[in-house]
Structures are given as structure tokens and as C-alpha cells.
Length: 198
Ligand SMILES: [Fe+2]
Ligand SMILES: [Fe+2]
Image (cartoon, rainbow, N blue to C red; front, side, top):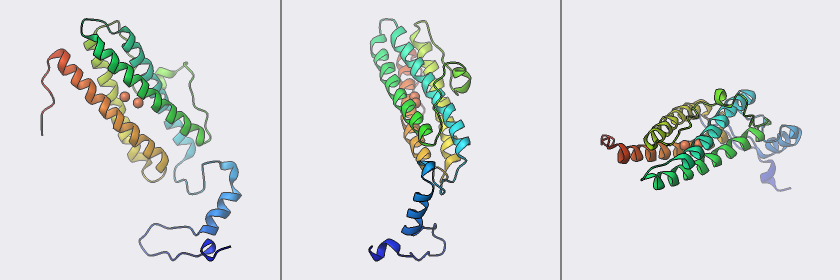
């Protein structure tokens, strides 16, 4: 075995602690039943799973809402809007799957039960009967809820659960794009002035 494998690395003051290779290997071997959750996981796994179940419900509701809107949107200028809704539905589905995978990695069972879905979700379903502007408004509201919620969660996870945080950061970026897209659509369909420029 090479020397570097068992090397005790000097820890300099003020820097985050680094475990030596032997410690990492021993720990990994000892607790294999923990799967991806190791002793350096800084969060409360059960709390993380609970939070992610709510994020999962939020994403499922977003898939349902955008899908319903992409089909029910009607009117002379609905073609482009329907395409946009459809694209968003597909992206919400990617989020849904990523969150479900993460719950599974942490040892939880992703909850796809339709019973109670609307209560677990942060944003609302708000299915519509075809009015484009109402649809766009509901989607914009839902995106703004998701953006606020995920931003808070990113701060909450911090360095305690880096993987979950990084996943949520990726999702947040897309939700902000979605909100921006909905705002643009609202401007072009309702003639509201665009966002003030700073
Ligand atoms: Fe999403
Ligand atoms: Fe979104």
C-alpha cells in the first residue's frame, strides 16, 4: 500500500477539517447500511426527507398545472403559449424526478400519493378553463412561490447537506427563468409595462 494512502494530513488552523484517507475508508466500510448517508452528513436526515416530500409535491403540482394549461389553452394567440407551458411541464418533471431520487438516496420513500398532494405542495394547482391571461398569472404566482421557498431552503441546507442544496440551486435557476418567461408572456398578452430597469 502506498504511503499516501495512510498519510496523516496536517490540519492548519482556521481551515475546515479534512479526514485522512484511512479514516474515510474505515468509516465507509463500517456503516455501509447507511447508503449515501455518512457520518459527516450535517443535517437531520428525517427532517430533510420531510422537506423534500413537500418539494416533490410542489413539483408534481407544477407538472399537472402546466400540462393542463398546455392542453386547455385556447384562443387566437395560444400556440406559442401552449408550447411554452409544455416545455415548462417537461422541466418540472425533471425537477420532480431529481427530488424523488434524492429522497430515495437519503433512505426515504418518495411520496407520489395523490391523496393530500395539494396540501403537501407549496404552490397551488389552479387548473383553468382556457383563459390565457389567467393561466399565465397563475403560473407566475406558482413560480414566485417556488422561488421564495427554494431560496429559503438553499439557505437552510447551507453546508449541512451540500448535495440537496446544489440540486435546489439548479432547480431555483430554472424556476427563476420560468417566472421570467411568464412575466414576459403577461406583458405581451396583457400589455402591462415590463419590469422596471435598475
Ligand atoms: Fe420545478
Ligand atoms: Fe417552474
